[in-house]
Length: 113
Length: 113
Image (tube, rainbow over all chains, first blue to last red; front, side):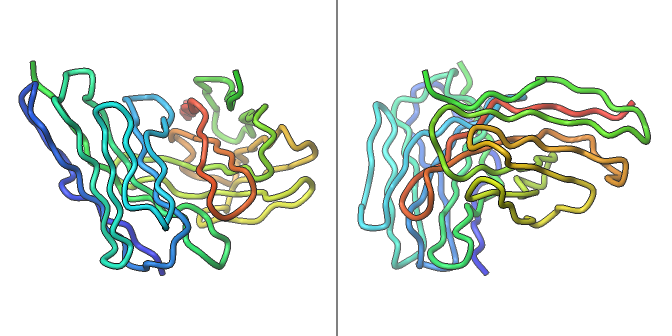
């Protein structure tokens, strides 16, 4: 059974710092991995989608990497801003079976001015 | 703009009542999903539908029902059999299977009064 773990559960950093959020998964048979952002009381906003054949994806100050063989992904946020404060969730789409997304529990990020 | 619309944003239910949460998408996606989110528990799948007139139970389907009469719509009914319905409910959609990502709505917060 696929399991997704995100470490740390919470992170507090000063504004301007570069930071890395970690995501690990137990089964490398995936189609893709997706990073989402969730603000309090809001839905999920997709940040980056990495296909299993890709090593990384970039969008603005965000860079996500994928090492499928080791079951790991990282989300790198450059020059963090208070507006980056949110919960970040990663999810994998397994190959086979029902192919439903499997989510981690998220990392709550606070960027202090 | 294409997207997923969930309504209402807030919903209050009295004990013993059934309530229906609406989810509509104009993305022409085949698959739609309902998740429940509780603090500290992450997202849990309630029901999903991969084609019109067909749906499957997820991990926590008891006390819930769905229908999929149109491709664009996937309403969720929270029945009186659901003993602890207070939660944040998220609807999502995806283009078929495989390498496509998910798109989420903005959520409905249901509270039992």
